Amino acid sequence: MKFTTYFLLGGLVLGACAACSQGQKSEGTDKEDPHVVMKAEAGRQGPQRMELSDVTSRFRFQGKPCEAQVFRSPDETLPLVKDEQGNEFVDNRVILRLTSDGRRLPDRVFTKSSFSSVVGEDFLRHAILEGLVYDTVTAREVVFAASVSYPESDLYVPIRLGISADGHVTMRAEDLLEE
Image (tube, rainbow, N blue to C red; front, top):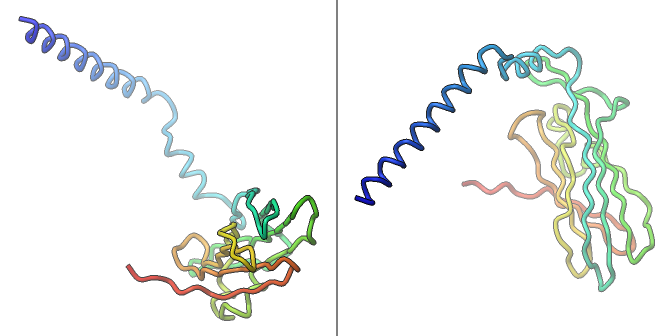
């Protein structure tokens, strides 16, 4: 008897949920379709820009507390990048601010041309600096991962960027692993 009661009660709850969700769908037909935003976005005029980014990471380096602030912003002063379809993109500038034990080291400013020693000129011509993020700490340096990529695609060059305690910067392109 209890089983039948619970079974019927469960069926009523499921039926009510289904009716509510169908009711919400029919009410939403008078409202704007959420895909309209996507259509308006596609019809946008002018060069496309990535969003501003401001990320702070805290870690210990050589026994001292450190902080890395990475600011990415579209930079209108850099040359525009065009893809194969003729879409234009504003390239980015990244500012890296390191603080070690309360002492601020000089800011480092990166654009895609900062990586010309490890990324080919042909690739750079059609790519943007997508970003820079804190990765890890080794005994000798703080390691960041940078990415130079074709806009809105999966084609990119991953770069390992190291900054030593005295501010010396090293970089190398990382190999992409095949899956």
